[in-house]
Image (cartoon, rainbow, N blue to C red):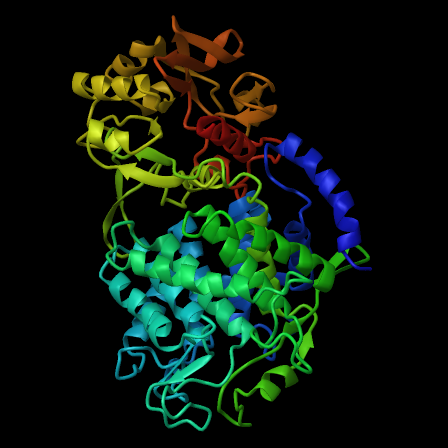
Length: 636
């Protein structure tokens, strides 16, 4: 049966799920789709590809969608699926089974994104070695005279829009993970070459291919461009822009140019959205053409790029309307449910230029390509779109706000697999057990910007932020050169709060954090952390770490069963008030101070180990839902 008719019921159930889970949609279309595909395609062996179980970009796109769902919902099953899929290929020594380097194919880079994700979470060296191998492959990739990557060895001097997504988000994630900032200039160069040479000035849309040598039969003799605008090619480019911007440093010189390219691209995409269905056409600018059809994968890609672009502040808020129309249209046109399993129809199987048999890139060529049900590219794009639409209801609340996390009073470092020294432990960009990556995603659901304070706080730095988080200040056993809270920093922070800032203080247990200096800050607000050890958990005695958070505390809108392992306690005095207690101990307190607010808790309980649900913590503990709830309170 068509799925949209049942979506209204699921929407009602979903609203109950939001109340119970604090903002996580457990029964959204993309959650149901992910569950259906994980069951249908175990360990990422996609039955609808030409070579099931062989390294390739189609499986990579599916895993990108599963990853987006994991990051949005913290369903640990998603991560385990990604890791099992990657482990089919990455051997113990980090080599990749079935990889063909001589093909110099950008398509073969795409699955590296999943490899990088597994490295970032597990920190296992073999995944770094595999990712580095792919990174080094790009060093040898042939280039056009202008410096653009050939799409493949067999397509000389040609840039295809597909290649933007196949290579550049991986390169950006690698550059961010392994501290190679110099790569970002060339990543931007690849995308901006396409913007400069492949965009049709009349429509604002980009053509599928560009032959810089102008020798190919399909290439225009003057421009080198292919003849038509293929929907999914535009989709690949839109995805590449928003995903590269996600990893690119805020101060990268080319960043404004990429944001401008994204705005040009999505303005054209919105212009060619079908007025009746909300979808996009296989040949984008010929909606009335004989044989043309609306296409699922491109429509999903545009919904994702629009919604993520709005949430991240790259695109105008008005673009969310187009994303919502597109998402509704996708449910009506392409989604079916049968015997509890979801399916997606309407994804075109392939689209290319040249080759054998020859593909002309003409209108008749594109409309002649067939669609199929449950194509991995379409499913991956559907999950990407759904992951964003799950967050669309809240993304406007925090636009323009910055959430700053401390990396000075807790400035622990580790060696990564590349031998580099990097900050970790309660940091936004740390996806391992120790990090705050999921806590950061909770804030980003509200459209906030994340930043890190790597020096002692200054008035100028704090002026740029609306929310400031300090977690588990260092002691010598954790950091040989700790930075202790001092009187100057106390004054700077207190003055910032007084002017309207929201401060989150997240202490730890006695053996693992500093108290004496840190309390000079808390005491300013009537919050004193006691250097004791309570909520002590031995082995798997999880109930010892339980804390019940009731609804209506003035902080948490929903009730939660939290897990905080090994904590201190709080003593409160005016202006602070207890919010949550356990066994007579204050566990969470809040203080109003001038125009601002201070939140204090006895544990940094939102680190990934107890939030991302890939570990052994029982599912009844809803720390991620509580993180979303707290982030929403802080934003409001």
